[in-house]
Length: 419
Image 1: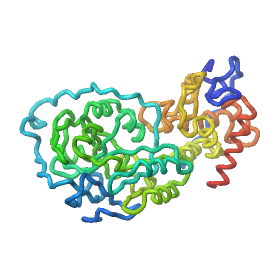
Image 2 (image 1 turned 90 degrees about the vertical axis):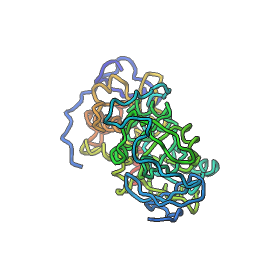
Image 3 (image 1 turned 120 degrees about the vertical axis):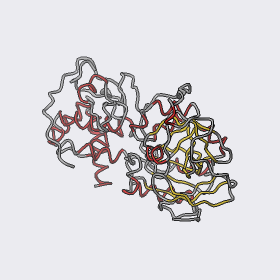
Image 4 (image 1 turned 30 degrees about the horizontal axis):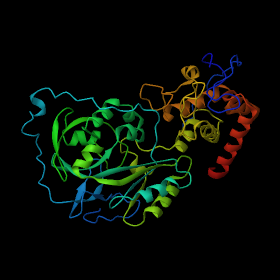
C-alpha cells in the first residue's frame, strides 16, 4: 500500500492476501455516517448445558464447591487433602509487611498473532480421549479446538477450578485484553499461576507472593497476576508442568471455535460425540457473558460491526472475512505484507483502524478491531448505499471483478442461511 487512503486493504487483484498494484487509484472516502444504535451438590454427572461442571483430580471423595466467579461445581479428588491454610505461608511475610518478591519473566512466550473466540466449552467426567477430540475437530464448520488439563484445587482455603495450559497457545482463547497482557503469559511460562479478578479479590491474593495450592501434591506457587479468563467457573490457570505435578486431569476440557455457525448447533454436535457424563456449554448464553468478558464469535463481530455503517449487511463482512482469512485461520502476513483476519495493509490500517474493544489500541491482528475497521473502510467507499456503490466498495477492497463477485455470492449464501 503506497499511502493510507489507497484503494486496497490487503489482497491483491487476482489473489487474496497479496498487496495492491503500485499506482492504484486512490478512493474518495465519504464521511462516515452516524452510528445506528444497535447444583448441584455431590452429583459429579450433570446435565448438558447446566451450570455444574464435573472436574476430576483422581477418583475418591466427592466435593461440592462454589466457584469464586459464580456457579456450583462437582469435583472429585484423589484423596482427602488437608485444608489449605487461609493465611499466607509462614515462610512468607503477610502482604502488608513489605514489598512482594519479583515476578520472574524468564519463560518464553510466543507473541499474540490472533484471537480465537471460544464458542463452546465441554468438560468431561474424566480425560476426553484423543479420538473424540479429533472427531470434534472434524465436525462441520469447526475451525479450532484446544484441549486442556484441569481440576478442582484448594487455594487460600477455598475450592477453585483450574486449567493447566500452554501459555503460548492458550492466550489466543482468552478475552483480547487478557490475551494482550504478555506479563501474565510470561508468569505462566515461569510456572506461576494466574487468576480471575474475582478470585484475586475474594481470596485476597497479592501478585508476587507464594501460596500453597492443594491438589494431589501441595506446591507453593507464586501469584503472577490476574485478568478476565472469559470462561464460566474457571478462576485459575497454571502451567502444564505445574498441572502435571498437581495431578490435574489431562484433556478434561475442550474449547471449540466454530465461526459462522449457530453455537447451539455446535453444542448438540459436540455433546453427541462426547456422550453422557459430559457438560457442554454454549458460551454465548447470557448467563455466561459476565465471566470475564464473555464469548463473542466471528458471526457476532460481523453483525456488530455492520451496525456502524447504515445499509451495510453483516453478510458482506462475513464473506470478506471468509475469503481473506477463513475467519481468522490465516492472518498473514501475505506476500505483500497484508495482516490480520481482514487482511489490511498496514498503511491503510493507519487510516481506517478501529479500537473496537476499547483497550486503547487499534490492533490489526485482533478481530475485535479489524472487523469494525473493515466496516469503516467499506462505508467510506459507499458500501452502505448498496447496488453499484456496494460493488465499487468491495472492488476497492480488492481490485478484481472475480473477487467482488465471489464476495457478493458468499454474502447471499450467508443471508440465505442465517437471515
